[in-house]
Amino acid sequence: RTLDAAGRYVLPGVIDSHVHFRTPGLTHKETWHHGSRAAAAGGVTTVIDMPNTEPPLHSLELAYAKAEMISGQSLVDYRFHFGVREDTVDVLRDLTPRVATSVKVFMTGHHTAPSVIRDPAVLDRIFAVAAERDLRLVLHAEDDGVFSLLDTHRPAPDSYGAYEPHRPRSGGIVAVAKVIDLVRRHGTAAHVLHVSSAEESDMLSAAGAAGLPVTYETTPHHLSFTASDTRRLGARIRLSPAIREERDQECLWRAVVSDQITTLGSDHAPHTPQEKVRPAPDAPPGLPGVQELLTAVFTGLVRRFPHVPLDDHMMLLSRLCAARPAALFGLDERKGALTEGRDADFVVFDPSANWLMSSREAHTKNTWSAYEGWTFTGHVDLTVRRGAVIWDSHDFGDPDGQWLDARPLRLHTARPATV
Ligand code: NCD
Ligand code: ZN
Ligand code: ZN
Image (tube, rainbow, N blue to C red; front, side, top):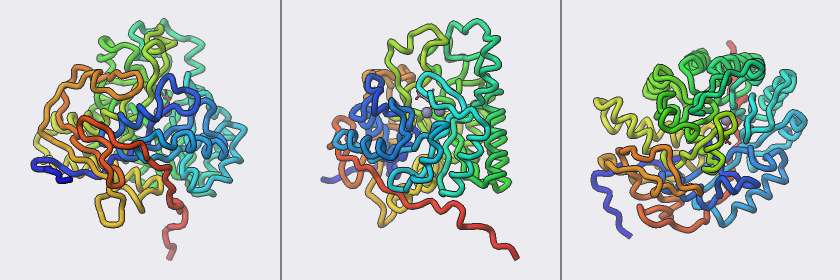
């Protein structure tokens, strides 16, 4: 097979380290068949799946059983973030890189996130165990204490549903401050997910610059929508943490282009249309995004930073979406770069294509996109996973994605020499 890539970029296959593909138990929202097609069409060759399934991923047995369920369904390679509940902290001591190198901690709860860690002593233990076992924590950092306090004086629900006055930015700021303090005390490596506000971004950039092992992610949704879009899109773009103001979005973009944000994750979190049209406080937060991740962020980059050379945008995207997620989660011996010895995972990307996104193009189970009606710049023409074409702009390849092993993270061996 010959390939004409004239005028195209070849990028390393995207590693989306934040998807909710909903197996087991929530397959009315998404399946691995559909989710991995959406991934392949978006240039994603590896995903790391979140543990808030039904039941949630709190045992080694379920991890092996889950891999078994996915086997033969997935176009893309996969890993799992392990989960934790207040009474399962000891299970983390038995984790091996085969099963997971990372643990997701929910500091607040909502519909699809029932296992909240509320007790500060338990949070302390989780940070201690993770530091001892070389596990990276990935955190949903919003503070449940702040929210429950506000819930008792809950204002009338916003009829648009996406903007959540009772789950304001202060919940995120308080939680991020707690995370930074815990990292300082335990030395745990912490990756804060879906950062939504200017304050959180500034705090995390400063903590990283000060040498703490904190990193952070933002999502294509937080970079693409603002609170004013909720007038049009309503609860469809309700997510947790909420979409915020223009000034937050500008701050996040600045943090992206100045290379302070560590990774981009799609937070692909589909629900059914029936679930999403419920009245505001009852609509579950989350929306699909694995297919749009690369294209939506590329579109934002070329529109907002038209004077930056395309090569620079592409290098930035390959750090944010491939090299760094591979390194953070122990996949960098196989993934994350187009170099000898790595898997032949790559994307042929046409940077000059302008095309209309519509729900008909969406491969997620419930076939819709919040970007319906957007003109995207940049198109994923071809996706190759371990040498096999899994997307060629029309058709998909074979669902023989593998459950990947990872290297041990060895987060705490490289202590600075004291002289
Ligand atoms: C996610 C989901 O639906 O699983 N929803 C969301 O709004 N982000 C859960 C999560 O990541 O918090
Ligand atoms: Zn989350
Ligand atoms: Zn999520």
